[in-house]
Length: 61
Image 1 (spheres, one colour):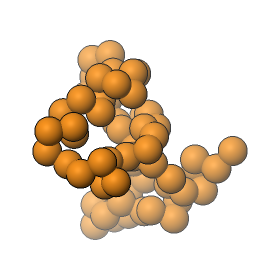
Image 2: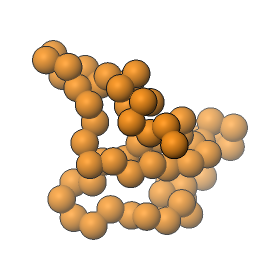
Image 3: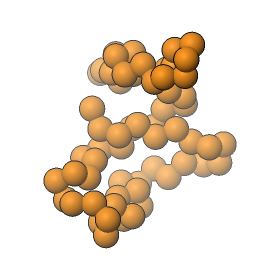
Image 4: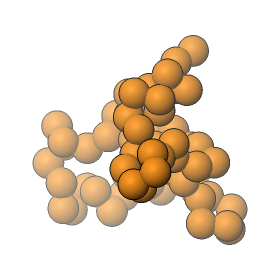
């Protein structure tokens, strides 16, 4: 599925290299995200938990 990114109001980074650069020094290569997906907001339930099934359904092609 990749990693989902929600912008904070300013223009989000859209380049894989710019997002992957901080991970190079801290995270093992096999643990880094293979892709980044940009979304407007994460679907949440009434308690504030992210609804992963709804997110997967949204991101299917």
